[in-house]
Length: 424
Image 1: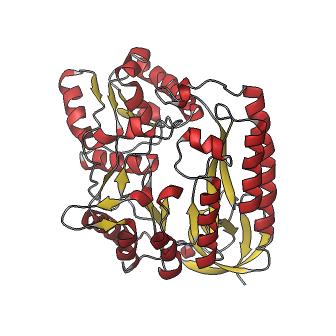
Image 2: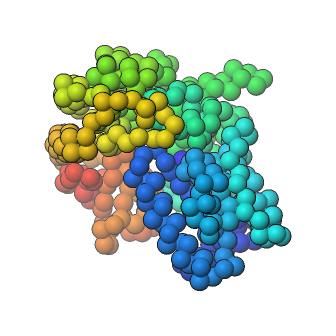
Image 3: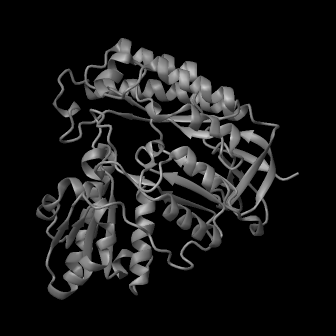
């Protein structure tokens, strides 16, 4: 979502006459887009603020703006902590960027724009901005109504508001015209998408419409909530030829007691039932997830149930992290906090288990042929990279004119984080 918001801002600024630079020291305007879903990205943001503030002290005419979720959460407190900041702007205010800059240019007034009432910003295409990109994001809804006890998102992104299907289809069509081959639909709770103005449109309807777009090779979406994974949506993985067989479905914990305190709205049994349905309609589907260790009150037995769920489901990959208090959430006020050393120990144990599963799954692909959409240059020198429909990275040696092509690739080696392929 942050990458999508950054693209939105960049296009707005280019249309107003500004141009990007590759060195912050050369910039007249620096925008820092922030995340606050966990403590680690928040601390990284503060470190970056400090570095950019030093540039501002050397270059007083520079405008420094902070946008995104951390900006929304801290508001005016951000300016008090970093006086060099000229404006603070939350995610629902992004389409005011030009207006805010004009106010600053005219009076150098510091501005805090953190309203949550506005609908999601509507992007306008900056011609040529996406040229050369093979994949892109489209935001279909903003905000969340779930209020999980540990999560800051509803407080910094606001309540759920969906975009009109017509505007989503226009944006997707513009991206395809620019050369984009794969689109990922975004939302804090993407499968709760619903548009009720004039017609009753749900997420399944939207997927079916997007699946018909000419020139689009692949369609993905993230992030899903298990409680909103309907049978109709599951069936889409069998019926829609462009919908990739990969789903990111956070489970967060394997203990029903912990899930209840998290206010997740499902049980471990219901979660595994949905996994079984997904694999029934699409046996080759790749499933990734989010999992948290050390939630307040999580016992060793609770943690063992999380490990058990991982063993049963056999995820293709996990984003795993330690619980950290988020200011203003219900969990922040809970007692029976798990110590940092114990959280670290549990996280290490969980990650060792998942690495074993992921490596085995990738090794099992050795000797098979897979369609790979070539996206661009690999981190491996002299190679290109692409992805399978199951969202696995493949590195291979081939001509650069193949970027944007769908190639049938022989998988020679499976590693922990990628596959090595070759054209034969």
